[in-house]
Image (cartoon, rainbow, N blue to C red; front, side):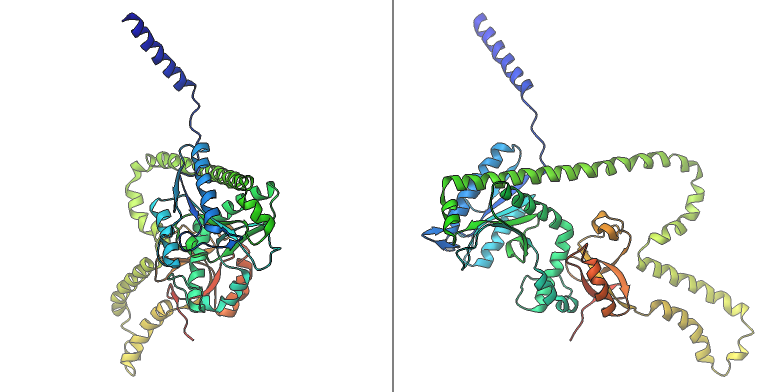
Length: 436
């Protein structure tokens, strides 16, 4: 019995010592990574020399997922597919299913892996795509943007629906766009460190990225149409190199997110301190703030609230004027109806007539944002808010211009900071859809 007790005691000590010596789990900037193997089932993707894109992407994704789970404990990996299968009967539905899986998992990063192909067998290299459009498409659809400012369906087949996509893209730029760009750059930089030919980060209106509600990229790991790259992609050495490259990119991105999160923490910690110090002092002077609150808060109210306040003030003045203005009465006998109505209509019409102007829209949001938000970059406190129909109800624009041509002149400068900016018409605080 004594020997058994001693053995049990030694085992307990060993367990405690191992637990104490174990290093704490590293903190990560991401919690859930969604890996998407392109194509599958009846959709083989690119096929060259008997090699199918769907098979290569699945091999890379499964190996990458295991490496992330082993090397980044605490990060959950979710796959859109783990076998050779399609997720739906049509291509559009299949892509939507992939996005649904990612959204349901509440992913922090969406990484779709594909293999490239081209008519020219000399085409080679790696590239990573993010949601967006090329400068050529921007120029082509500038007028369509102005004519249709809606947040609706994805379709690039005509101008109006292309405008809808751009409205989404420019909103994405200020939600996940910068993070998607960072992930794409991490991938390309790691590709180049292994000697791969980089074709850069490109923007394309990809349906699968459009439907995912998180930072997302689609990376092309090489060209099957190029014999040398095809041999590399098929080889164990090549697939290992690609998996390691993507794994390091995920690590780099996670570190970036963690760094950005840490940079935001001081602003959160500093705010409550002055709030606690200021509250006890005014307690003894509660009566004065109560009298002054309407004046202090008035500048911060929305336009609708200000209009209500302005309508209540004139209502009190007319009640005083009839008694004090008994003299003007004989002068208005010739035009009794008009003379009394005109002085009242003129000040109201100047303030209430709908004002149409043109502005450069830089952002759309589901919720209101502070005009001093860092998301507005160099235009902080220089933007104004207006509204529209749709999911992204709140819009933010730079400048108020009397004509569209004036707004278009300013568009170029704004696009240096916000590449997806475009011109819209605003009337009475809401966007106006132009009709041809």
